[in-house]
Picture (tube, rainbow, N blue to C red):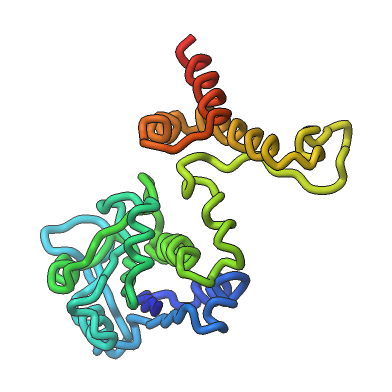
Length: 248
């Protein structure tokens, strides 16, 4: 997958996208990230890319010319184009999975008060949010999108099981996990994890995930129990117990 990022602050992406999992994905040819500085496309002698809005209002807006030329340079017309904006739907797993199927996506990062609407209209930009709050610019939001989508590309994560078991992917929050030592500051690891009985361990993980989800994300819990599943007899007993506790 190739991701073109159009921004006025390209240096913000250097450290984040060059390290760890994303960095290795790029080195292995699974991911290509191309960061473009919109200022490089400005015809203004001062490389200006914004101006005051018509009709008045606070702040500055990105002007069409530099953005159009930057988007044209990556052949944006007809491709999947995103604009990070609180006006769009909030990024979730469904949206991330749909993006992961694309061969190439373009992400436009606004700053300050936003961009001229004609940029969004001409390139059929999909506005996308990462939450109901306001950031100074779209760069941080774009990094969240890139990290979320990149993890879904086959081969980026070392183990497919890691992806399948993680929070949200399975429909439940991830169960508690422990490592050595067995006891630390009086806190002990649950005994079931040492018994070597993989069936009991899996059931403990399942119940722990259910309990955490019910307590912290009741919306996910309700969605999970309402969806069709092929539960084992033991899993059904656990689910019935927690559902009964919820209704008491």
